[in-house]
Image 1 (tube, one colour):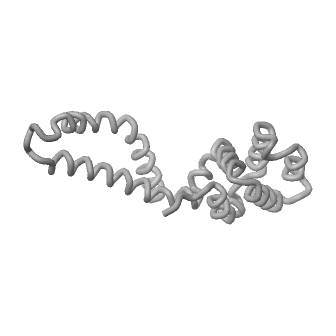
Image 2: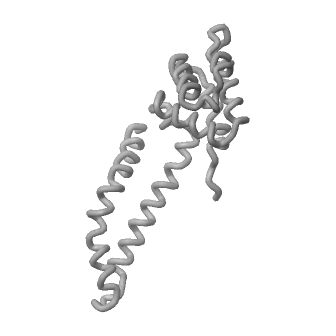
Length: 163
């Protein structure tokens, strides 16, 4: 399985972002302003004015912006996702491309936990074999807990929120 590029993700997420009520006019304007101010090589002043034109409908402006970013390249799409995260975090977490990544992340964590458990409990009982490894693995829940527990709790709360 190959990793999706940001441009691929933007193609996948465009119908969702174009849906009615997904992004407000203020959020789109903030994203455009951020891309223009912090990254003028992504959106020039002329492009920013075109995408913020109040005479055009929000849907048309957003469609033009997403098309422009898809043609611009990977870095521009990545910066769009960064701006989307900053200005519309709840929407960013519901993107179809992000929802597709969740089962993979959960299975990776589950596989890691099962592998560690098998190594600790099914390893050879000889104390000379893997003596140092058992000490490290004995403390691994403490080490792993700090770094992984936030991710696992966020994953569980997202799933529980949909029930």
